[in-house]
Image 1 (cartoon, rainbow, N blue to C red):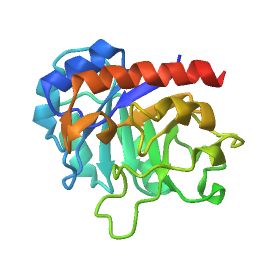
Image 2 (image 1 turned 180 degrees about the vertical axis):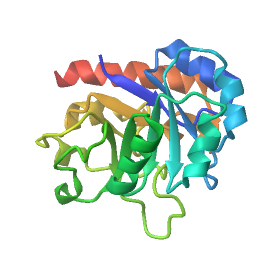
Image 3 (image 1 turned 135 degrees about the vertical axis):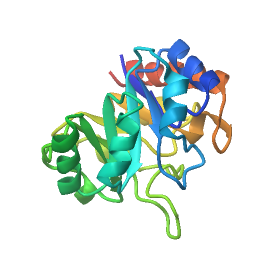
Length: 210
């Protein structure tokens, strides 16, 4: 069964919807320029003592920023927009699994070794003029991933929604997907109905691609 990450959880309602839909990971965004930004205290309050695996997203963070979150909110994975070396340093310092977000324009951009990390989030490179390295709703050319032998577990992200995720999974061969804006009615406003529909559609796509 395909794994699904719902990213940008910023309310108890969206958290409950994601858990209820059977999402694999619940993502919290700690990047200041994101419309899905939450503080460490907000993330801790939203998630409570729930067991659901949590992923914290950071962009080129200082150690202090990660430490401030981990001091009040459990994270099971740290997702980083940073260099491979910086990602390894965070992994070693905090003892938490790290996924590196990788922007891709051509097959040459795809990782060829595991970089000493625990996984990758694969998405399209941001468009010209974007003020965020990811979460821009830009769709990747899924076909270029079909023959790629990933050196570590990976998630497909970027421009996914209820209407296209089944096709994306079947075309790319992905075993995990990551969505944020594709389950929103406006930037940062999650829809419980779209979350549920996305999880269903993603898993139908996995069955179709087998």
